[in-house]
Length: 573
Image 1 (spheres, one colour):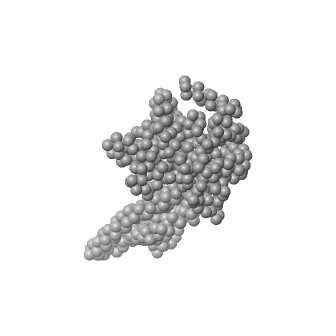
Image 2: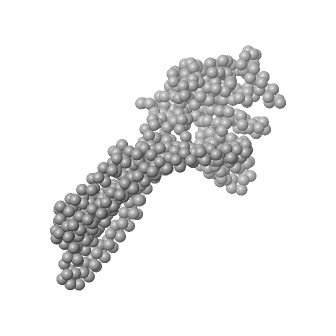
Image 3: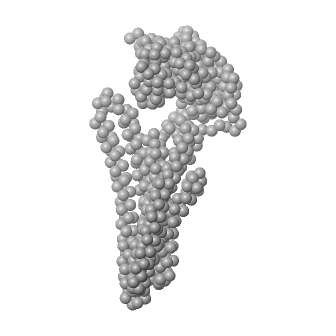
């Protein structure tokens, strides 16, 4: 874990060395005041050397100016280094997140993911900057103080420094409690973030059902859990801080008493006694830094452990020797395909389907029959438990994921639009597309008249998740994306089920144009939208129940005929 952490310093090693060098100079600057004070008390004042007092006062002023410059560098460039490390960690985490399979997002709350990438990396950055710096400064100042004090009186120095091991022993004993409470606090933050995100995303539903009070109560419960977790963490921090503070105060008292006794019996002079008192105050600062380092280490490493848990999730990966999928004809075969979700819920069992190129195949049936799952397996959003799926005679696992998905376009019921303009969202199908191609895609999706009616045209801002647009407008943008992408295989997953009949008819025209010349899989509950499909497959939890054209299945009088009869009555009603 430690090696994984320090590798983030490598790209910034020059800045790190520069920061540590300035920290060293700053620590050395702190050593001068007690020694110069000793000489002034023991020599310059008794012998009335006013010029040397002035000279050394000016020297100290110069040293303080140098120290101020070093502190500026440490604060500015040190924090800059920490931010850069934080950016690197966030970049790696987000990049890894993009390669994780659907199954990870099925079982993980979005708020928890955000907490790891935002909150945890901030704490890690603080550790990355202050941790090595505080540790290095403490070692230099404690080591330097010990050496300089030994030049005055070894016995007294050993007596004073004998208290320091007790301080480190206490800090070590408290470490586990700090780590445990910090981990619990971070987990609770993730849960609160998840609840908050759900509440904000569902605010329209809450208003529609007048459940604001319920949402406030639910958030209050999560908030109180967070407060309880933080209270435990603060209690551990309070025990740690009060205990170490007491030991430090005893250390100062021991210095005063022991130094006073040595001065009383003439073992050290007044200057040395003053120097000991100044040094005792001086080396309590590095000890405090060490204490802060222990706290930061627990907080930062807890965040790093949580981040590494995310990074340890297995990403999607191409199989060895994977090739590019190109010159696609669109012949698709499902051969003895079975699948179950992580919750051990079986969805597909021994499914066999042959789909000829350029044909439109509809998947119908009751909810839970595996229609959408079948489509997700084709894009390798999930991996089949057994069997195989082929495109143009080759197992889809033998193709690179990038080329496989680039050749498959998906239009779903719940169209997701990103915060941005209409142009941005259409260009998601091909970021390098010129403006005329984007406009052509909008025209093919029957979106051009709507765009022309807007003051800002393609540059109209759609809001978060396209909140300013109607369902039909959002669906047309999704269709325009696919026109721009121009894939050889098309999946229409309940693409019109949420639309009214008039809008659906217009969208169907665009979809018909879109599916022309492509192999198309259509998932639908509204059977009127698939009656003209080349082939209709009725799926249930037990597998394929029926397979044929619309007329054949109606004449068969089975599951499809019943669904068709119910669907017609519903639409007429």
